[in-house]
Image (cartoon, rainbow, N blue to C red):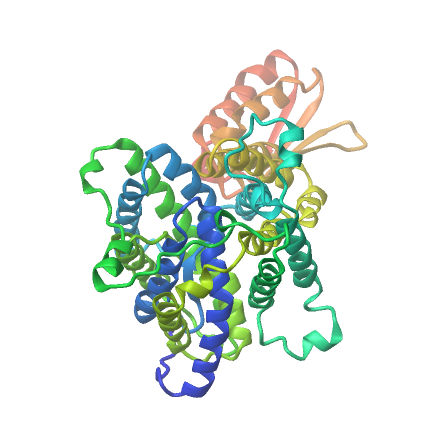
Length: 501
């Protein structure tokens, strides 16, 4: 059962951890919006709604919701396919409704039916996409270039100021937990530190009028409202006139499924790392996420999930109740309203550095090696999902991985229907498995046909609790007709009376 906790019972610890999560979430909200090809402010909106709205409804005490790296591939493709961001927001709105329905029909165990190797393949595929999509920002390459540009054009367009910031940022991110004196300030998130350093380095370039200074098109661009009317104009509403567009519904279903699975997996992980070992009602969580996506879409925000990076940071910072995630959302709101001018000094190369490592972690070669060592039944669905996500799309990739996994399950079932052996007297023993289904019919029929003439076969059902009628018919036919024609002695042992053999 869910343990009840007073929201304000640990206010000092929760406000402190909420501040830490805010510092982690701020660069991630901007970075994920960048990777998604969406307006950067949409990532902030999603973080605010995920913190305040989802935080208030959810029964999870430590999970934190916001824009997720796992949805970047879907968002990036969907915005392009649908042709406009406001049409995409309609898909997010519908996805939220689908999640509400999933919550009300108690589909909280949905993720349990997706094989772990398919989920890992999906995440690895997303990691590959994130990594390669961030390279232009990391190198400061002009956005006007495209895939048809020659290698010489790409090389000549590299901005060495952006490249230098990327190198410094990646080096700092990789060494943050390894350098002894940095461990003493581990409560300060490394992502925030590289953002500050990126701003300072570029400020130095600008101040010294260096050619390494980064141009505005390679900096964060958030709107800076100067009046209430300008503030209202920042927010984008869904284009409800596109409700009949089948692509909108397809994207909505995809977002609802992937966001729900990612959320449920994160909630499971959050409950495991919770020091108090509290359990979360996953059906309520789907309702919370659905509500969050509906509100986010109405304000012009990205779709969201419960996110393991922010959740882990929240837990490690000592969060006790969901006041922490609500407080982090409030801080994002205050930040977006009061200091957008400061956020606009962040180099895109800095955000790209953070996302490069996120992409690498998701598609870590050690994960690929792990499934390779597990054998082909685990590796093939994993690698097929990964490649399909990269070269097709996310939903097709997951579907392909599930189909391949089911194929291997069926194939394994075929092989486990019985064991075949011969004793010293050249008697063939066929020991049937616990369950023998119609899927095993062909294999059993083939085995019986290969038994040599003028021999004896013993078919043992001592461990069997179920045999399909199709297989029983084959056994009857073999016993009554085929065995006599081929002079084979058949002995059926330990068969139940109801099999009528």
